[in-house]
Image 1 (cartoon, rainbow over the protein chains, first blue to last red):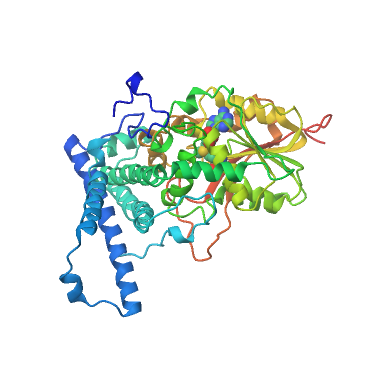
Image 2: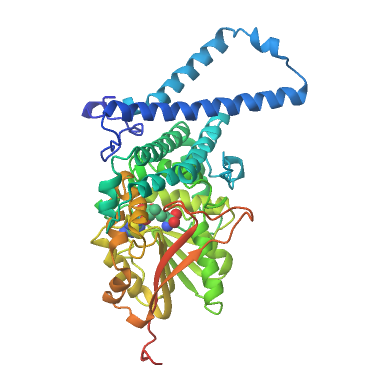
Length: 101
Length: 394
Ligand SMILES: C[S@@+](CC[C@H](N)C(=O)[O-])C[C@H]1O[C@@H](n2cnc3c(N)ncnc32)[C@H](O)[C@@H]1O
């Protein structure tokens, strides 16, 4: 975050997320452009989630392992919950990319 | 819903030891972005055309189409999808690469090291003066561009380029992302089956996607791939080795002034380089092709077609990358007269030609539909080098 400060020189700085070159605006309202970007990211992420659910369902079906009530009543344990929290945060990072880059 | 062809999914692209590791969701994300690109080309682009036709205007050039269409909702929606898939594709690749950049560097180091008595064919030149027009642009929204290094011996952006290329082009470049190279080989084999170059130079090879096919049809030729971007060359040399190709030289050189000697090459080619070459550098790159060629040698540069000859609407659609995808030299290139430039740098007018190269299908059922700049077919400009003492008649 403070990589521009000389005394914080990091020998291996992370790749910056800002792009050289202006991001074009296609609508008359900058908020609408942002809303498009967020919506498209959501579209993508929902599709990713569907693919994952499909993978799981196919695997469970192949192995005859799980029925749907087990899915409905599932509660994660502490470390599972923490991992899920990370997933949520990374998810939001992608959805709100246009507001942060 | 009309049936669209499915883009090539991640698990069908060629896997090799240099390729990034991916999670299930990262693969699904790249696959979704590839689908979004196909959707934009096959379902949304036609709505832009319909909207244009409904306006009933007869523009005389692409600028007039732009005036008519810039505020059109169909055009704007198509643009928003296209722009955002490009940005998301970059972020996806960046996140995949970011968490493994040290291990990617190690893989590259290992693959690039000399093997026993065999010297490495990767030649980097840290003192090379990298042209600003390359290092100063984040081409097609790739943060840092081709030349950026955030680690010592970084390969991040090259790894990202390789991982996401299939999503950008909706899989149309085939499992090895080498459709342009294969198109060139197909053209050479069909048009000039007797032409067997012994020394070949690829100008602006990137990570060598389109260099490797040449090795297949010319197994004994010396092949030299040059680029100014060290990360691309490091990754490219490692990738070639990972794919079992051990005898292509990757050199860090400026394609407008290489260190190779004059009249020493039989085939000079480039793929998708001219549109990323500045106005000043373009004639110099063509001039360098002329300097390098022996008499009887061939130079050929594959690109998107020039605008001349296309109707104003198609020109306008094809100009999208120039305006919205960080390709600052795109529009000017497609408006220039490359034939004339070739003559100006010294090629004999009657030996300059324009042609079309089409990649043979790697998948028989795949349609070669138009995607305004992303289909596996190219325009090419080329020239034969006059043989000393020969005339136009001879
Ligand atoms: C769009 S990429 C194409 C790469 C490759 N030919 C392919 O088909 O995959 C353009 C490449 O041209 C390189 N380039 C641009 N100007 C150059 C120059 N003057 N000398 C050498 N390479 C150059 C860039 O570094 C980049 O790798």
